[in-house]
Length: 272
Image (tube, rainbow, N blue to C red; front, top):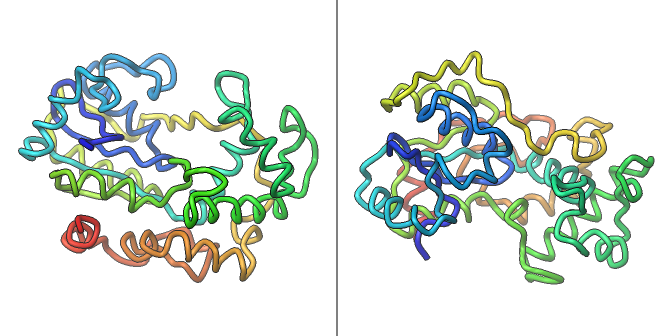
């Protein structure tokens, strides 16, 4: 299986396991900048040079050798499951993607037909009931994760613990797991532990939110999207994420983690 979703600087200063919808665009650009002294011109996910990625065949032996030998500082980044699934809905389901099309072609028409989900019309600009549509999307996400129907779960809403675990079960070990909600603090500690060809000043680094502007703006506070049933579904889907990464499953309005992540526990439980 190797190390899917893993990126590494060309200088091998640091290795990073991508978790979708968890500041990966910003982290990727920081890694790129730390090697080259400039940001990648475009979406870092499209970069085919300047950064080692498991998806690039030539990078695989370098990443695998580094990860298994734990040569470099290794980290990943996680996010509150409530805000992550909500972000996935507005970006991937309601939004128009970089190529000008809907995400995964016929996915949205299928969701409209089978789950009654509205997305704001052909261009996402029409008014629709965001709360009702999101809750229907949540049923769909649960169906994909629990029963793998009507399709396999997508990386943008599959559990974070599943992404994080692949690095462990294939022989890697994390030195840090950051919270998106305390990004500068966590990323600052990563940078303190590594030597980079170019210094990185986090205070001046922009946030590279590549999904911003793709779809309709969220109109309500996070907690308004989650009634009791929705909270039950989210906990059913992401129980391990809440437990491993110390988020509050009982209060969608509280996006902050409530305790320190125990790396030994993460490696023990996700490495099984």
